[in-house]
Length: 345
Image (cartoon, helix red, strand yellow):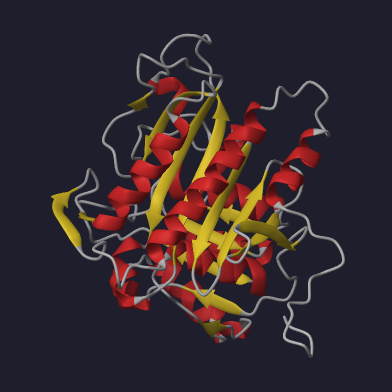
């Protein structure tokens, strides 16, 4: 914002993300600072990735690498760049035992020449990356757990496949008309907007709570004919059938962007099981990299998440690339989805 002389008008108190994270650390007298520094490193990664996404039409970063990832999806050039940035900013710090990425088939071990730490980082480096060629918002999603194996050793599969209920911090970075970093370490959800002129994330959305009155539902209705009868009944209900709330439909196709709108406006996002797809009967979303971090955020913001029967945070992952149906948003809407699924299948 500018005043009459063209100078930028700043808020009365500027809270950077570094300051905010440090202040939250004081709530834990026994904290070593490692978690604080991991979050700061992820924020730095977000700035670097944002610099690539904003130049995507000018630099040679659009399109695919002509490779297929573990998910059976084409790897976008920006997927590879974002994955590399997150790994290289965290592989040498001595704060992580291991990392796992939506783009990698196995654990990303810390190189032998560096020490290991007490945390594990899971991330989707660039959610919605297939949309980047069309200038659609994309994002990075992450979650942090404490390791279970002895400190000093390499991270294990057990470290990397913990329940979402054991997350110590999670968040996402949205690259759109502005770049936003939203995170929670278990004490509220806070959003920060990147000021490109000073290169800092500034607190812009303190203590985010999902609005009590829902506004939108978000789902890919192109797949509706493949959903179960219960999900189809729920979809009719949110549009006003049987006394439902008659919500507006909004769907971008980048889950992190659809989730962000749901969080700020109220409503529900869902990507249900596809009962006719033998390859992906539980849908396409990954429990570790997408569903659990966003479920954690939504619960901290007063909402709820479900796989149609229970909170995803209570599911024991069956591997690094466990897929699950996903419903997330206002508690009442998520509960209603579970009710329709239980009643109609």
